[in-house]
Image 1 (cartoon, rainbow, N blue to C red):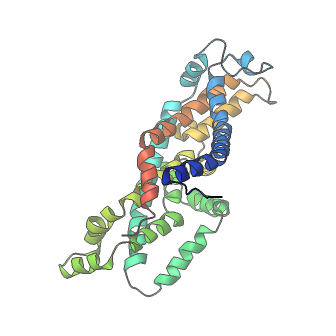
Image 2 (cartoon, rainbow, N blue to C red):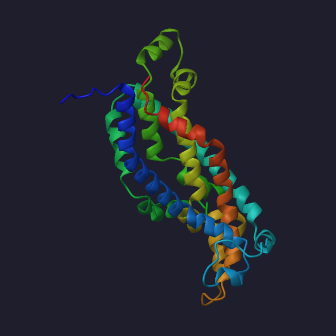
Length: 295
């Protein structure tokens, strides 16, 4: 009895065939998970294009029998969604800019500068990351009310303009910057601010992009704090306006809800950030990949 030695191509073929059942199972799980994750969003969009009677019909229809845009026309004509969109843009841009500047300077200081109490400050940053944000709501509201910021942009921007997660992220990023570059720049007479923006910032650009995108998403979807400090509809951001609009359409006893208009308003609220993410998703994935590299 002789034993035939398999060639390299035969080994590769058998290895590939043996992996097919496992690969099929993985793809099935991914497809099912994707459908489950995307179906609520699809249902929101399709419901916004249906008549109200069809939304509540049984059995439910996955696609409207007759497309209608009356819900979008009603939303655009009855609520100040354009003003709320502008408010959201102002809040997101201001928050992200301040968060980025504070995180860059603080992260660089904690990573590259030597001063008394540096480790204690870093431990405090880590400790603050463990504290739930809801604990700050009452103290922050009392401070905002004391300074007379209720119903202003200051109330929306300043309390959320600094977060410990961003500081920690940039501190870890600057640790990957070689000290030789900084020492050489110091010998040449450069100050730390110049080193930060001319040398450090380009080397941690992928992490900066991640920081900007994550904080932009957080600020755009922020609801609890704006809902607390904003009274007038003219100062509402999109999530707050959507909640008040849905409450307005609910009625005094929660009946006769115009689901089509609620779904249309929800679609308009989520569409901008979704479009931005689809346009820059490749850059976002690449930035997350690059953050794991050490220079």
